[in-house]
Length: 136
Image (cartoon, rainbow, N blue to C red):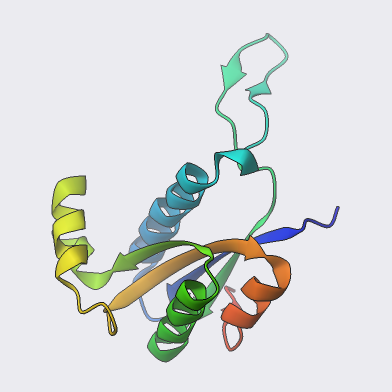
């Protein structure tokens, strides 16, 4: 199936594995929260137990350098894409309010990004993620 929109998560390529997984998980929740229309129906197992809804389209995960992350961030803003960001200082916090405080303290034009998630029209996501490689 071909979707009109695309979801991409870009993660700084030199993070530790636990950091990559943590950033990816947090950013995916940001996209789901900002685009509830992208969620599929609940999953129901053979006994009738209900499980949480998942995004109804694939999420592409890319490894990116710091300059590629910053360029994608700027492209996301310029193109008005749904946008979730994770900055390095968030690794040193322990809860959401502290994450938001350190995020707000970042320079808006040069944040220390370690991860970024974008959702929008396919061609806009392709342009924003140019230079990033699918994560191995």
